[in-house]
Amino acid sequence: MSNKIPVGILGATGAVGQNYINLLRDHPWFEVAYVAASPRSAGKKYGEVVANKWLLGANVPGGIADLVIEDANFPDKAKGKCRFVFSALELDSKDEIKALENAYAALGIPVVSNASAHRWTENVPMLIPEINASHLDVIAAQKKAHGWDSGFVVVKPNCSIQSYMIPVYALMKAGYEVKRMFVSTMQAVSGAGYPGVPSLDMIDNVVPFIGGEEEKTEKEPSKIFGTVESGKIVNFDGLKVAAHCNRVPVIDGHTACVSLEFGAKKPSLEEIERIWTSFRGLPQELGLPFAPEVPIIVRHETNRPQPRRDRNEGKGMAVSVGRLRECPLFDVRFVGLSHNTVRGAAGGGILNAELLKAKGFFG
Ligand code: NAP
Image (cartoon, rainbow, N blue to C red):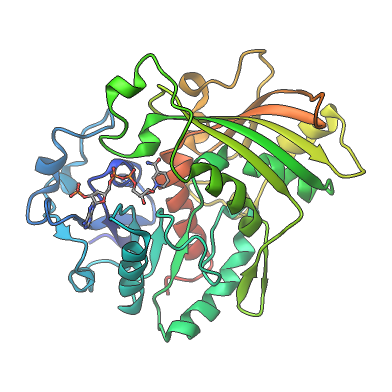
């Protein structure tokens, strides 16, 4: 019998859920023991439900194809079958997702979520482990506030901001104040879930609007760069962000064109490159299985990074940056790219879970 930690996936049949199944197939610590989705899929075998909508090249892993899908709306069914769950749920409202994730936590099942519902709950960490692993300190207060024993909720941020948050943080950590950021994103269709944007809206086209995305892009950095004080996360208000978010006909990989304005002390382009190439975070120090060895990959070609060529760097967990140059409006500008369904979704969730395990949160 395996001594890996049995995990569940809520929303296992969707775009993010499928990525969890795929990425966890040979995970050294975790194994998928429980899959849940909507009442439409409940009672059927996983392999049958995803047969015509499997988005990944490889086949559904053998042992998983035969698992019978449960209805994610009944947390009791997961009890005793998995130690924690990854939540990749899409329900009608954020309140419903919040209530359901809380119900799992109340049963003693920790929730590592991709959904945005809990991102603004002040005692729920919104993690990018290279940046704010210290926010795990708030979990004790979260458990106490709810009277939860071993259950809790952590979330990951929006997928598109992953393309530049670690590079921006690396500069802040090196002592450079970043005061203003202008960002324009080109986001892949897989970010909209399955079946996503209709093909006739997307092929030969760019859609200059993604509902709620600009608000998330402008707000989430303030929580991620925040500090834990008296059992809650206090947002950082020193960075102003303006965002344009666009959907483009790319399958995977969110690209962002970013301009930064620094405070009085301004790094040279050479210094920025040195900071980025040498940056390592806690996941790298701990040697977490999903931590990319080099979290920021600097490219020097005039036309990189590109989604098709660079999204799989570091097994989809690294951020690629390029076109670093001066900016006539702010100080510097660059292009960032990350894999939205790996680093931006399932891979990011797995890295969060690895950090939690390494820090003893799963008992
Ligand atoms: P998706 O492809 O639409 O999948 C949604 C999942 O939720 C499916 O498994 C679906 O099951 C299940 N579901 C739908 N209605 C349900 C119900 N009433 N009760 C229980 N389960 C239900 O969405 P996705 O793109 O994977 O996104 C999942 C979550 O991750 C969302 O909250 C999204 O905002 C977030 N996220 C997505 C990305 C990305 O790149 N796609 C990135 C970051 C975060 P059925 O198959 O049975 O309908």
